[in-house]
Structures are given as structure tokens and as C-alpha cells.
Image: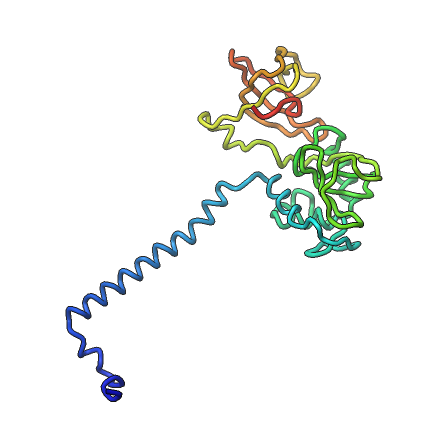
Length: 254
């Protein structure tokens, strides 16, 4: 038996009908693997097409480092100082260009202040938060919460919960609505007036007054414009057809 099993022409002794079934089985297996491979390749692309906003990506990235130890001058991956944590979060999100790459806390503050992108109001998720005129920086989560690298490590804390003074937001415009979503009438974005607010002809508090919107009025969002230190403005349409611009910070999700 050993001599037969080792014979080079052993495959010739397999009946033709059994060999045919084997060939068909091999072909079917190859086709199945090709289909599986196409699914594996396509799935990540589909996931990227429906990815979260830029602000969501930055916040998810910085949140992964909660609990990491503080180390002066470090940009990670396991230890950070405050500016190093900001840089790492944006770099991991492939958005380092939004903040001009690596910089110090003072550098981020003064560079963006010169460009008119800082203010104490209208902070949006993903913005940089500056303390002590550039002595410390973190990333704004929204809802009055910040993540930053403190001497005790990377922590989530209230915006005004540190023993150093809040200075300003650096407005990066990462959380504005997707223009694709706004363009789709079947997936229109709606917000609701949090207070009675004026609609303006342009995104400016000094622009021509259009009309006043009462509190809780439902607004259809047509466009979004981030004006840096002048805040984020939305162009809205009322049920009666009137349109105008309002500060986004004075509205809430409908």
C-alpha cells in the first residue's frame, strides 16, 4: 500500500465522474473566496462613506487617551502634555492640517487669535479650548465639557472646572452640518428656536432684520456658515416660506 500511495500517477486511478465532482467543488470554493474577498474590501469603503463628522472623529480619538499619564513635551502614544494631546487627537483623525500641525499651547492661541478665529462664546464640539492666555489647551466636547492633559493625567472636566482661567475657544468649524445632508430634501436638517430670535438677511448681527421667530419654532436648515469669532450661523426656512439667518447657538436639534 505504501508503494501505491507514493506513486506519481495516483491521480490517474480516480474515476472520471469523481474527478469531475472534485473540479466543480474546487471551482465553487474559489468563487466563494472571491466573493468573500470582495465583501471584505468593499465593507470598509462603505463604512468610510457614512463616517461621523470631523468633530466626532477628533472627540473619539482624544477620548481613547483618557487616563494616560502626563509628561511634559510628549505627544504620545502613552504620555502627553496638553498641546501634545491636542496634536495627537487631530493627527490620528487625519485632520492635523486643521490646526496647522504640531504647536505649543501658546502657539495655538496666538496663531488663531491673529486669524480672528477665537472668542469666548459659541464653542462647538471639536474646538480647541484655551486657558490662561495659552498656558493650557484642551478639546471641547460640547455641553460644557473638555478633555485635556492635566498634571494628574488626561481627564474629562467642566469647561470652567480648572484652577486656571478659561480664555477662549479656537473655532475650527468641525461640527457644522454636512452640505450633502442639507442638499437632500428627503433628509433635511431641522432645528428649533431655543429663544425668541431675529432672522437676518445675512449671517451678521448687524444685517437687515427679516422677522422675529418665536421660541420653539421649528426651522428647516438650508445652509451653515462658520464665521470664526462671529459664531456659526444657519440659514433657515420657516413653514410659511420666509428665510433668513440665525445664530446656531440659539437653536437646538428639533
